[in-house]
Length: 111
Length: 112
Image (cartoon, rainbow over all chains, first blue to last red; front, side):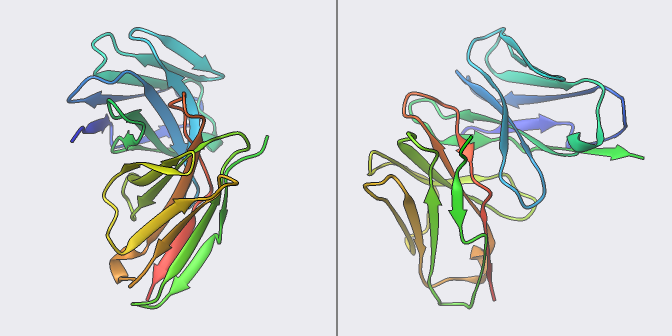
């Protein structure tokens, strides 16, 4: 099946720093979704991308749909404590709607 | 805005017992998805329903079954529970022509 690999696996940053993470696939995706999950809670949809090369922002978050359609990037600017959590990329499998999730990037802010 | 509602939030069962998880999608969403998330894992797709019909099936054990009712809510029935079924179970909903799935808060199932 399709696999989504995210890097880095974890990040330790200081408040105010910018964050970059990416997601790569072994096959083409037509849609990329980015979710944030807090411990014990459901994933919250942050950004949806629909076109290769598309760059979309949601507040301090910016995501890009890679030109090859096999990758996507998420950037967070000027991180704040509430940014702590696990960030997942996800995409629908071609031909149906179920989501395949990436391996996740855990973001921790060092006091 | 209304979100996906799941109940119960927490459930403790013993091995070989049964459990029923409920999901109420966002109003006017016609598609429901169930996912299972083990500790430290990403969510894994179990099953989905569109307009009360099963639309896709993932790695769902034969001991589990699900359905979507006329009011679009869905129930996941789990029988002969095993220790390995302990996990977070999420329901998500969407409108049929969108890939954007909105997740509920989850049900944490613990099997002892």
